[in-house]
Image (tube, rainbow, N blue to C red; front, side):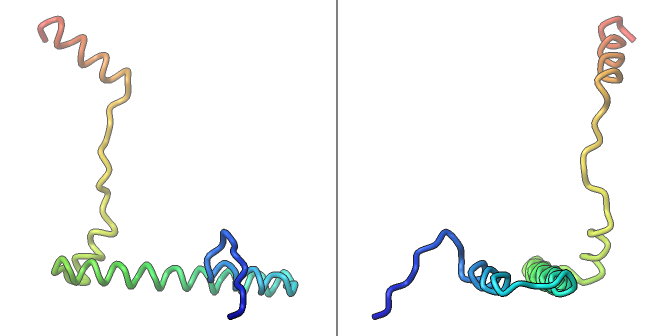
Length: 91
């Protein structure tokens, strides 16, 4: 049995490091970056489709939700203090 080198890297990282060890031009590096971005987008798209299917959502519902704004709007400290002062004075 052939010994294996123990590294803190996963197999995908090792393959990328092997590729970089060969030396890439700036253009090749940019091409690789675009390929990796497309790959990450594909994985994300697949995950969204899986979750949508599990939850019984349509593509239209997913697209609508992706364009929504669901973060909580917080008042500034000044607005909160003014509101608090109004409650304390009986207004």
